[in-house]
Length: 309
Image 1 (cartoon, rainbow, N blue to C red):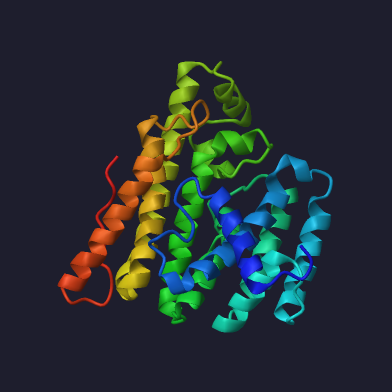
Image 2: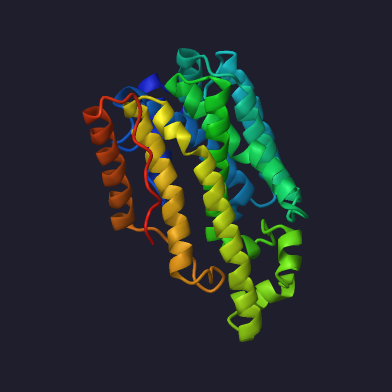
């Protein structure tokens, strides 16, 4: 599409957003209407760049495409965008005074994913999350008009917890790409080797190894929940219209972890998936908290209880 209009550009962003979002819908009806197209533009940029790093059709061209995306990003922030996603993103960045740095951090993370496939410690993995997860939270909070350092810290934890939930859901999928986010120190502690992971995925592991893996995943799920809980105060700290969206993100992460527990943490043999009923439940609970918050005369959404499994 050559020189798309603004409406055409945002329509493309909406199409990209609609094609993804298995665990929770992007820019759903929970998002304030005035912000929906802007959330879609941000998501379309991040999702498309992530696909370059992951999807098989881009094999052999991944670095080139990410480099081209960074060039397009810089042009967009100079007001010179021509591609639909970047035309929408440029308009969003200008209207809401968004900085370019978090978008550049995301591209750095996707490049790192091309070469780094193991993490020795959780501290190293957490450092990766500062590039691949936290920028999304910071971009959205800036979009929503919240820039206080304390709120950004809550957003960092919420974003990191969501990323961990997705990592643990996709252990088998990532293993097929020779990518292991489970820290080596945790594998060693629970007595699980990379060979065990491959055997478990092939349904040929002996029960003892399977139990060790379940113990490992139980620990990782608990840690992800704890990090999500560190970010939960953000829900109460913002206004109810935005808080309901943030509550849905928090609940979505918890629901993924519920699904992992529901398959006895055996994510290599069965990839846990959320479904339409899960998404409806997340949306309904988030909306109910907004109603309760308004009835109580509070500025933010009441902090949710942990989702049940």
